[in-house]
Image 1 (spheres, one colour):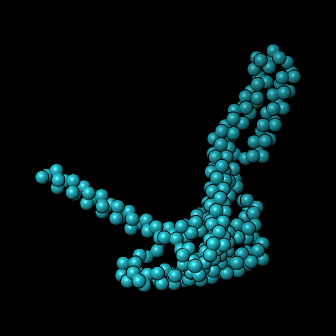
Image 2 (image 1 turned 30 degrees about the vertical axis):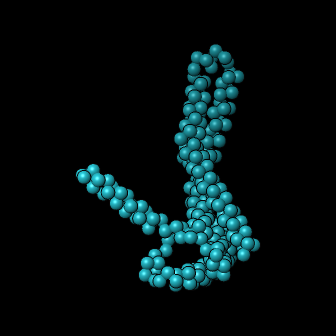
Image 3 (image 1 turned 90 degrees about the vertical axis):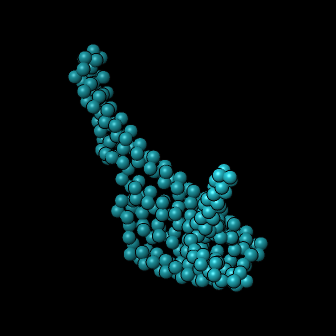
Length: 234
């Protein structure tokens, strides 16, 4: 069991880093897109207008033709480079940002499953006897494992079909099957993780049940406030 636990911890560690890198690249792309649109375009536009107006200035007549030739060279170079870059933000940045957001979110869902913070109905926890709950927890892991492994199988078929169609995103030039590879991995990762939880129940993470904990904390706070008010009235 220690070996399996080590594998699952390594898996979670890699997914945590992969998700963090995806969101880091997403942030850098957004910064680059805004910088291109709001800073670089304005600076290049200002330099182009300045060098275009320079030949008609008194400074140009004072320095001579060499300065006019230099300003015209700078103007043509800046204009050509600006046309090559295009006006506005980076064209492929938005599409690539969506890919990174998708990948980061899927890695996050795998980590949520590993930590027991996934959404699940809590009715059985309140209704069923406590002696039966451990069995229900194990059955739950087997059902989830079969579900995600089936999704992994379907996603593999989907990626193979996408590869056969040779589809390419016209903006980024990336083959879509490369983007879709994340689906078989994530589904297999979650299915394998829950399968191990079903085989080794001691590895099952405790459910965070964040909604229930928040309600209980609010109720406790209300009770504390009520007790304080009663004591104050006395």
